Image 1: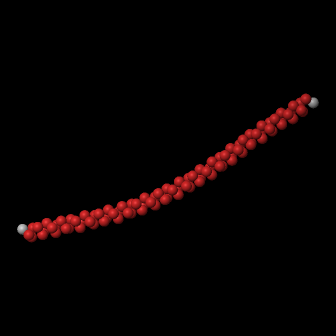
Image 2: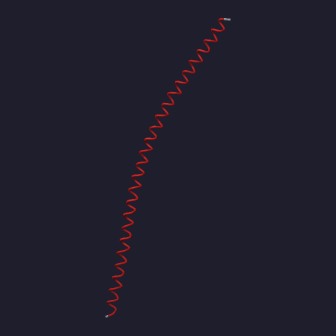
Image 3: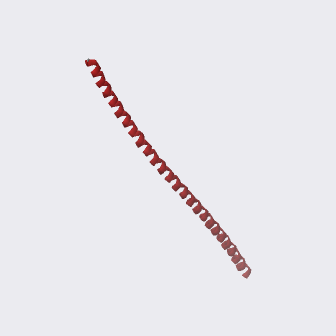
Length: 93
């Protein structure tokens, strides 16, 4: 009877060791996963900063090129008015 109890105790001791090993493996895997998540967050923050930077540059270039388009339209209108004025001067003579 004592031998059976000793065998049961040894079996429980082995199971506790296995559970401890499993818990240790889970802990190390959780640490690895947390480190990976941290690295991904840093990469995401860098990418987000890069996208914001590029969007700012793109908006600046759009505004500048839009201003150039408006300038071109204004210059074309002035040129047309000048041509009409010159044509009217030439045709009245």
